[in-house]
Amino acid sequence: MQNFFLILIAALFISIDAQAKIGLNVSLIYKKGIGKGFFLSTEQHSIEQVDEREQVMVQMKNGIKAELSAYYVQSIHEYGPSGFVRIKGEIYNQVGKVVKTLNEPDLDIYLGESKKISHQERNEEEIDLIITPVSL
Image 1 (cartoon, rainbow, N blue to C red):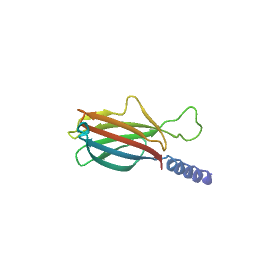
Image 2 (cartoon, rainbow, N blue to C red):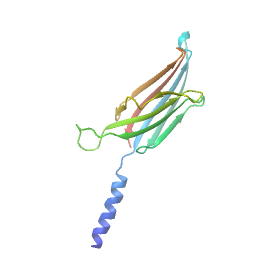
Image 3 (cartoon, one colour):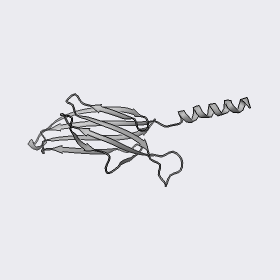
């Protein structure tokens, strides 16, 4: 009986550790002066580790930021662990205003693939967010 409890406790610890974390390779790119034939580009690159439903933030010095969360979505066409990640979050401009919401429609990405989300303001400024989820 004592061995049964030891095995049960060990199985619980293994199942807690088995929850896969998601790594997000994030590139936040700000371009200014697009409509004038030349532009200045500023970039922030980051690798963020995200637990299910945890929110992370990537911020540039000029105030532009992205707040992101990610979780695995089980596909009905796959067996075993999912290779499909759903990203939720917002992109903020320099003054802290939400300029893009990633919740509708759902932003679903396969592990290892990249998606680019863009927002353009006044034909002069552009904010690009490139996300690549990886399994950790």
